[in-house]
Each structure stands twice: as structure tokens, then as C-alpha cells.
Length: 421
Ligand code: MEV
Image 1: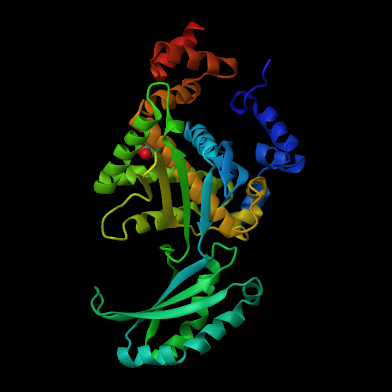
Image 2 (image 1 turned 45 degrees about the vertical axis):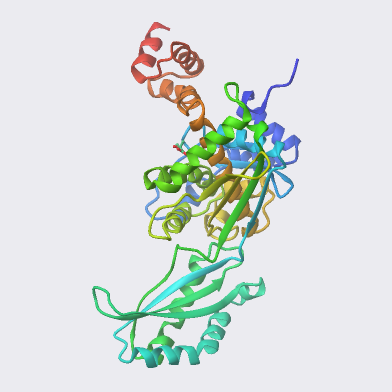
């Protein structure tokens, strides 16, 4: 008899297989299973007014090939079908050589606003004259960052003539934050140089804060799929490729679709951000801002066909993620999740995230362009509906199975089935 597929195994069997394959060790398994996950005492140091911890499922999308490396991707998400979709797209792409992925140097941008500047033109030249001195000052406050190759890269200045409060200057700091997400490093540097900038310009410093529009820290991924590999039970590969292009075209011209297209991409990205303890709001904000950079919302991914019969997918978006500091260090499962993916740098993580986003998008467009997403989604959703209706233990699968067979998936139907059991 063939062995059970990963999705057919129990959670304990899945963990055992990951240990057997060397993806995680026993210790990490305890952290990921929740047994030795985030405890209340640790949580109490993370935020304020803690009363406990809040759990979500963590699943694994298996079989990603990214830059030639096989990677199993941990995903934390409440929505059924996201992990299954990512796994399917991972396998499909793996058959075609996988994803190539890369990321820019980890340069974050911070803004320092200077108001009531008496002579803006003089202020701009004074800042320019002291540029090196200001950068040296920033470098000296964070020797650890400098020792790992980070540090200030540039300062730029912009004069805003008209705003609701009149004119002001903004100084932009470009800081290489190495393997950190970078918010603390950028904010601290800006606060540090604010007095110096006030005395150079005669103005008053107001905002000193990181920008989440991390356009100097983009991640990219690409996949090339042979049309025939895309075939489904109902459609040949050529028609699936054409249908994916139809779906992608709508996102190019219509923001109503572009936003949903991008939401599907972020389904995958957010789930990995959560699993690795990263600030998913920062990445979301950056992604949406980047998608609207031309004044209209555009899709973060593009699909096209080459002269042969290949479908080519590409994605590019800001990816402000860290592998050191913050929750990535404190949350036990986040550390284990990074280890599972063999992540040794924020750049590598950024590339993986871009590939997962593209995979999620591929799975969504393939389903939407063919059978629609409700078939797979509702069938997986049935178990959640059964639980919501009060099913426990064995009842959950029984109720879900009956609803699937009847093709009616609703809480009322689940309750009826439950009372009949
Ligand atoms: C649902 O969470 C995500 C999708 O709507 C994405 C898409 O439409 O591309 C399926």
C-alpha cells in the first residue's frame, strides 16, 4: 500500500516526517506544534496588558523549489485552502524548474520633517554641505549594524511648498538595516540627527519615522511554466494558460480586480510573515502603496506568454522583513519556522516571500480561470462550518463529508446533520 500523502497524515505524523527529513529537530517540533510555543510569561514581555496568547493554525506548503533549493514553507493562516493552493502551485512550478527569486540590499527609508525653516534654500545647502558629517554621526550610533555591513547610505532632501500647514522640508535617510526589519534602526537614527538638523536649518523637527513604502528594498520572483504542465481534468494546458492570461488582464486594467488579485498574493505572503514573527502590516502597507505608485492600483504580479508555449509569471514588491530582533527572536515558533526554510538572511527570506506570493497568485488564477475557487474552497471550508455548528472529534469530518456529498455547506445544514447523528 502506498504511504499516506502529507495532507492525509495527522499533525503528529507530519511533524515526524519533517524531523525524519531533517527539516526540523525534536525541539523545533515542540515549538511548532504549540506544546512549547509562545507562553504567557514571554507574551507578557512582548506587548502591554497581556491576558494570554491567541493561537492560529500553522501548516506547511511543501515542495517549493526556489533558486534550486527545496524549501518547505510554514504558513500561519485561518483561511482554508491557502496552504493547499500554495502546495499545488509549488509542485506545479517545481515540475518546471521552480522559482528564481532575489531581493535588493536591505535599504530602508526614513523621513524627518522640518517645519518653520526660515530660509529653505539655505537650509538645503547647509544639509548638503554637512551630508558626510550627518552620515558619520548615524554610523557611530550603531556599531553593531556597521559590523554586519549595514549603515547609512544616503541623505536626500525635498521641499514641499504647499501643504495644509504651508511649506516644509523633508530629509530622507537611506539606511542599510542588514538582517533587521529596520524600523528601530531608522527611527533611532532620525531621532539622533534631529537636533543637528534643527541647528543647521533653523527649523523645528517634527516627524522622525520610517517609511513603509520600502521601494529600495524590493523582492522579485519569476517562474516559467510549460503550457502543457498547466492542464486540469477539464482543460488542456494551452487553454489554462490562456485563461490565466485572461484573468491577469482584468487586474491590469481594473483596480477592483487588481486589489483582489493582490489580496490573493498577500494571502501567501502574510501567512509566512506571521509564521516568522514579521510585521505583516508593514509589508501590506508597502505592497499596497507600491501597487498604487503610478496613481492607480496595479497588480503586483504579471503573467505573459513567450514565443514558445511557456507561461511566465513575475512579481515585484517591497519586502521589509527581518530575521533578527523583535518577534522573530522572541517567539519560539518563529525561530523554528526560519530554520525550517533554512533562512540565514533577511534577503533570502524576502525572495522566498516573493515566490510564495507568486505561487499563491498562480493557484488562484488557475482555479478562477477554470473551475472557480468555490469548489475547492467550500470543500475545505466545510470542516470549519461543521466546527462552528458544534461538531467535535469524529463528528467534524462526518458532518463535513455529508455536506460535501449533498453540496450544501452551511451552518444550518451542519446543525441538521449533527442532530441526526
Ligand atoms: C481569496 O482569499 C483570494 C482570492 O480572491 C484571490 C484572487 O481572486 O486572485 C481567490
